[in-house]
Amino acid sequence: MKISFKDIVAEGSEKLKKELLESLRRTRPQLNKFLVSQFRQRRLIIEVSSDSPESSTEIYPDEKVNKINYKIYLGLDETGFGVLERKFFDSKSFSDRTLLEYKLLQQICHCIYKELQLKNNSYLKTLITFTSNQNKVDKRFFTLYGSFNTSLSRENLEKEDIIELITMYLWDLNYFNKFLRFVLDPSVKANFEKKQFAVRSLTATNATIIEELIKSIVNSL
Image (cartoon, rainbow, N blue to C red; front, side, top):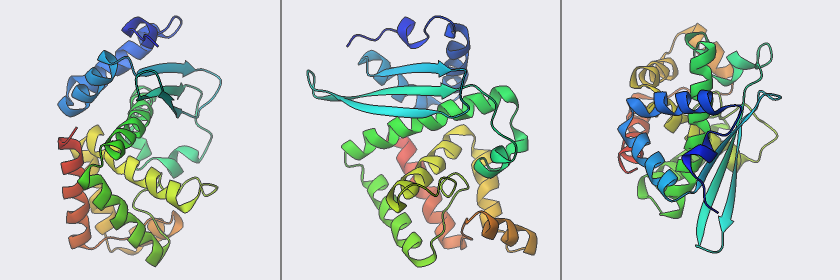
């Protein structure tokens, strides 16, 4: 299947998708490297859906070339009341435009996760084991997004948790560090919010482990 950049930014949404992609790639060299590789191999398509607020990524094999291809559906409809705060950390820091960029980045990070998994990336494997072991003990998650869709299996929730950590790190280091400060915060207010959303409090040691693993994962792209 031949996918050109023109296909990726299809009619009716070409300008929007092109701008979102350019904005994401501009200051994120590791992400840009990953996307350039996917586009050159014609393995990624992005479609916009104006009818739904939900975004998703379809992963399917291309048996002709023994590769995995990706199709991202980016939902443009407004997120329902109360859902934004439940799914996205510090949701008030997003404008309508930057939220779209972030939602697209989340789906790209699903592709990143799968690619690293296929390559048996050692940092990702370590983080998967660490996340699973933590969840077995406390039934909580590192991120709001990880604990959001309770209809998923525990393994899939843990995967979403890791993908969200990668997304936050790639989005902005200040944003990622702000989140770490939140999960490290021992105050009553922070602990109430964490308990409400099934987000675990972290020790300084565990926060450092996560930060170093995510940094290594991103640098290995």
